[in-house]
Image 1: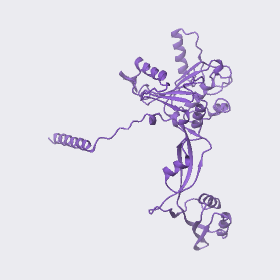
Image 2: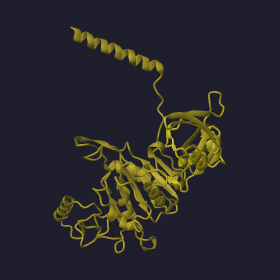
Image 3: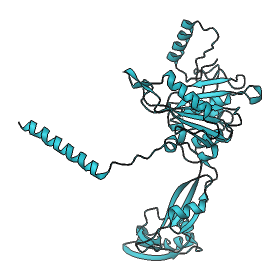
Length: 411
């Protein structure tokens, strides 16, 4: 058995002491950072159970939340030595190494024909959705889902841990899914499955009892069946977590719902390169009014740049006297550039027409699908607000209560 943890001598000592007390002679525990390769000559030991020689049937991990692994306080240089092997799916942001732990475990899975593996790991909410389309986190999620390793995610109650009160999630992964699980991911909402601690221990005020564990196990076992209905259990196709990130340019409308133009100061650097970029983006006539100072004389020159004009040549002609540019205004179509996140499977053009409802100039899909998992969204239940008359009655009750308190202070 191997313990996959960051290098921490106190944790190592506590673990060894625990094994001595239990007289456990089978477990093997190593002091080292399991996220980096091991070098016998390095001052910091690395992973001494590398996937080249070690594979496991079951793996459990409760990695620390929000650990920095990059920058001057991290071990990014060493970790990136595994970028073409263990971390080939992607590298998460340098201030959260949670998905490095998961990739380390996935690298140590047995092949299905050799017995397969199962993994359970506790995360906070960050690995579910942090990172935009194409980022390291999204690419890691895509790799896991497209390989059909993610089996289920269990949403836990808050205030279960001593040092944090946040909600946490158990990810269950396996590479030997039975037919009823394939291509699917189960989400179980167990946030209400707890009882209060008799007394709080730091942030730990809740506990999960045997009865709550039995509730969770029953729903995991039975929830895959066709026709199973439970408000706390939902099964999704893995594609349901995918989305398109579409860059769209549309024409803003004026107060008369007609395509608008705008005149405004040009706040970017007034250069030939920037003029070329504006020309390509707007693909229409642009009018510039440039206030120049030539010697002691100030003058304003106006020129129009069309889609086919040579921007560099016009800029060179304007600046041939090497004037000082005092100010620039320009008139252009009022285009807006935005990113739309569209669920996989939706017709992109139909979505843009429906959601933007403005003249669309152009759109471009990202080269890769993004992936995110949003359990709170899937289990959201609308709670209608109180009727206005009840809110008003509550307001007047509080008002009367405040008056009584003030009268008491006056006396």
